[in-house]
Image (cartoon, rainbow, N blue to C red; front, side, top):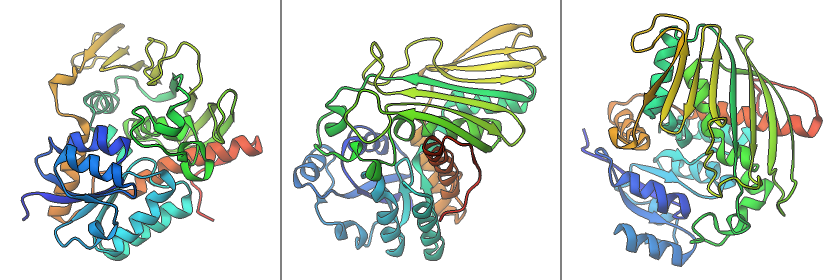
Length: 360
């Protein structure tokens, strides 16, 4: 068995530079060995920062004999095409969120990985390893809230004009975030696909129906800057999302910042509220560590455990070494995508959309 999964990075922009590279420096079972980006200056700055060879040639990664897997962090519409090329080159594939911008592309990527005998995963599923997420899942399995009746996701940001061409760092100048075709959508798919994955994972429920309304109110882009959607889950529970990127007074970075924001799960016998790095739990039942009939605060300081994405990458490596499916295979990313693309379709037709759907 190999000691480490050797990865090549495709796309060296903001998320790779500010997040993925830092995470991979802390993994035990994964190491980045090469990178590529079509912009020479971006590739050069990544090489200088992380001390791995980087170039503008995709082939330098895809034909590299030592590369076991790739991590794709490009504009959204390129995730699936590049992932298919990597699979055909015999590399395991991890794509940034969302895994694609259409269900057809997601299905093509999953199929290509299966044909090539390589693993596929969409990175938003790393949220499942957050201590608060894992604890909430355990509490629901222990009956802390009874049967799930409803879920709520709320959040608002006030993204600066510069975000749409340079992200938050301004390191890479591009316009893909403005484009519906290239991004797949605005605030919902860019920032809240983690939340739908978290709720699906914690509750074990799938979304059966979606209705949405959205618009672009203040931002000179093709994608939505405010959206509201309602969900109906397979057990009959309801759900609500509201998210915006143009809310005056909200933090530029999207930090929710108030106790009214975040994720919440309502059950027949209690509630679970996500707030920063803690859970607020109310239960009417007897559950270890909780006080019946009162709110209990459960804290998970950032310093108390590993970054969830360190665990995500190490667990993916273990799956490769053990010859098994990853904890969150590509089909999980596809289910997340289906919910949000259904929301966008609903907003266009002003009618509910039923799930799951087949690609066209």
